[in-house]
Length: 123
Image (cartoon, rainbow, N blue to C red; front, top):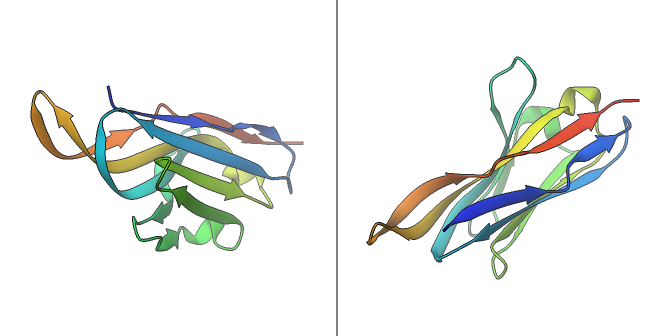
């Protein structure tokens, strides 16, 4: 069974840092873009950062200069280094990836989501 599993969330003080990880497992034959989204209480889920299979990155304006997305293609893992955290960064962070997998005997590209990891920035 293909899945994405996030880790690394927690409680941190303003100005602190956290590093999130997301590992893809299962029968995977390719991964294109890998993304981090977040959802704050009472708000819609928003795209935080994207990294392509070639390593090109893009960030939401609110996190530029503070967050860094990276990936290890050999390990099918994506990371999000978060520095200078602010209370408004609080939320559930979700990993998302476009992966080539086999389901019900059919191979194809599909969109997968992790279950999320909580990040709380508070003093």
